[in-house]
View (cartoon, helix red, strand yellow):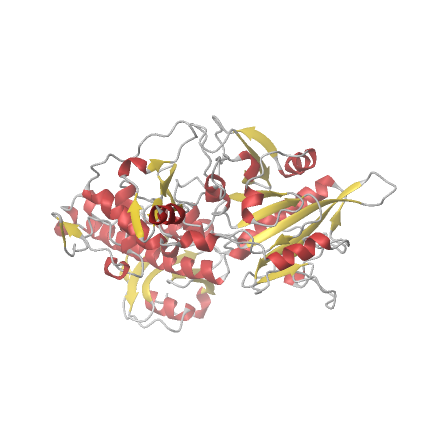
Length: 571
């Protein structure tokens, strides 16, 4: 009896983990639970692995006799995820929590974590006379300019596509794949040149009078980059090359944004409490009306930010707005589905945890901890608190504060001193501009810049292969022309295959191989090494579910479809 009692006491249920991914335009969440009893671990059966759906309408996702590919997929997911759910939790430090509850003076909107890693604006200590953003490109409080993600992305479309020009390709031993475009502007006697490398693109304009003869492609490339060592470029003769090149140049440009919105009530200090709020106060609804318009998701035809507009999987309503030619969808936590018995509210966190910037509305004096929401993507928070201007008046105002990870560069517009807004229109202009600039600035953080560099390198390699292959077809190479179209390199913005194949393709472009992950390839029921083939999509860019460390933020966001600004990543 004592032994059975001890076994019952040790019987516990571990939290689930999620792997979020976009396949096509549908977001899949696999929830895998395990039970532990003593030292033994029993995985749930395949019938207990369910496709994410509203409560009361869940159906088995996989049959009990799952095929070999499904087994391999879940082995990969387990290896990638491990115990990552523990990293996503943050318990508010008890000593600090007790101190906050007994302080009578006004508390700041944001408190930095004890271990640091975040900057706060305005700073908590008034030993400095300026805010972290005051010197950013000379921003002044009245200047609400929106930053550009890539100022040079549209140069090719603007100056080259409407004029007669040539493009060339080469592979440099040191710089890798190169794509060069040259245009002669006869009306201005000027040569325009763009050199695309894996790190960046360089462009310049040279007067024709500087040269006795038109310089070669190699000479023009060396004028832009001294490191070019190739002795010859190949001519691109594919008629649709401008379309492919434009797609590559503008792959980071998107007019759409999506941001999370969190509702923090008084004395709420941890992630679970904040994500569990369901009721919206009138003050919170007023702030949402400042941000945008509450719309019904069912049948919504504009930018949806990854929310379900057909089956109601992500709630009934959302907040949407248009702002200076940009469409913005807000992931409001209180409007996303609430799951009874799930303290982590993964239905909500799978959206907000995959955003890069979030806005927090506070009621009461409880400060917001910069790292209270555990996410690999969230890098910046804008915190808004409603206050009264004076005790003897009913005039209300909004106080604003900003926090971001320390490797996020400062961004405008600058907070006024004091950071208080009484005009609703001015507050809207400030918040939306600040949110957009915050996301663009977050892309320069170390984590995102590293991912973007890897993604750009892969896309440039794919573009180079596509241009070379199509040019050989145009030149009449019989060995290339006889290949089926499905076996040639794909267009940069193209992709195919189901969820399983897209996931495998993404794994193949990771820096770690399947052997590093510890998952053997299986052929015919036995583990063996499967050779990489072009047919399997090696080096291919697909809009399927790519892991976070094989894509940059903009490509992560673009997995659902070329028009959707969504991310299907592990938070």
